Amino acid sequence: MRAEQQLRSFLKVLESYPGDRPITKFLPEFFKKNKQMGSTDRRMASRLLYNYFRLGKAIANKTKEERLFIAEFLCNSIDNPFLEHFRPDLNDKILLPLDEKIAFAEAHEGLVLEEVFPFLKHLSEGVDSAQFLSSFFIQPDLFIRVNPKSLAMVLKTMENSSIAFKQIGDYTISMPNGTNLNNLFPDTSFIIKPYEVQDLSSQHTLNYFKPNRYEHWWDACAASGGKSLLLFSEQPDVKLVVSDIRESVLDNLDERFNAAGLKTYQKKIIDLTKNADPELHHYEFDGIILDAPCSGSGTWGRTPEMISQFEEFKIQGFQNLQKTIASNVLKYLKPGKPLIYITCSVFREENEEVVTYLQSEHKMKLESLELIKGYHKKADTMFVARLIR
Image (tube, rainbow, N blue to C red; front, side, top):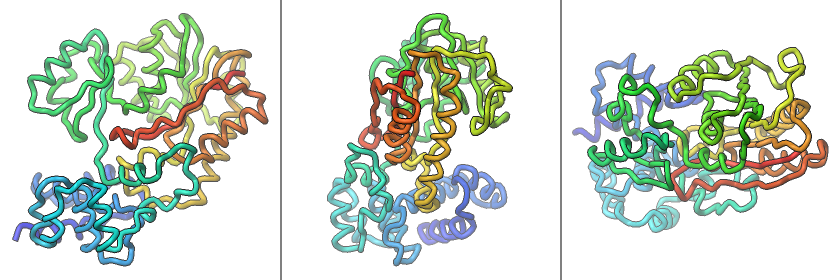
């Protein structure tokens, strides 16, 4: 039967998965080697694999098949033919609200919710652990930030499509994850791209930048340039330096900046764990954005395989790295100017404790901070602090 074949395919994918890299990189390679799998089989195998890992480290004593059936029960809210074949008793209850399904699984299937994410003692202050844990069984949304000049066109295009979407605030739109935006907005149709894909919580960090015209800003760990584009959207006349340790991501950044209309900036390859004077000896900045390397634990709803891969001792390693990088960038910040410290982590060691370190060791003045709780908005959870030198 169909469901039996889907289960065999899932087990083959799971057995082949090395467990040391993102699923998004593994699956294309796997499907390329297994071309006999059609598009429907690939979609189903991908869904089952993601849902399986949403259980984190819970009910580890059960078989892979049993864990998968419980994951499908918790992660779906419509009638499920796959589950109906193997566990019709669970499929009968699949329309229940998530909290009731979790309670049922705890009572009858051996689920211990706290074992899904076994790092709860490290959570930043203010995280609602029950909501946070439950969010792992919900697929996060896809968010775009719309160019204000393109808003009417984008909304009209969305309304004429069959895609369910929601406008959040003035220029943010959410839609189901996996929505193919290229079919809606072909890149060749626009001189300036009408939108940027950017998580809701990431967009929220803009509230902490507060740039002024003609100021010099440094996006110190620029990666794909999302924070720089936020800064540019708020103040197009800033003078921008972007840096990263990886040349490849800076090359990708060029393409993204060009599509957004950001033409004038300096780009530097810098290892911020070392003295940056060879590249920045004479620079002084009016603002520094430090989107620091981190565990990424606030984004594991999108990459649930990371829950199983992560080891607790790494938290301290990330904190040490963040302290080193933050200490090295501060010498290039003008007195009275802001450092915007950002992580996509839910761990206090990477968040509040680093802020405390910057206050005590570098005499930084904390102006404001926020744990941006995305777990009840189908978005990432992030941390941002604005500190003044």
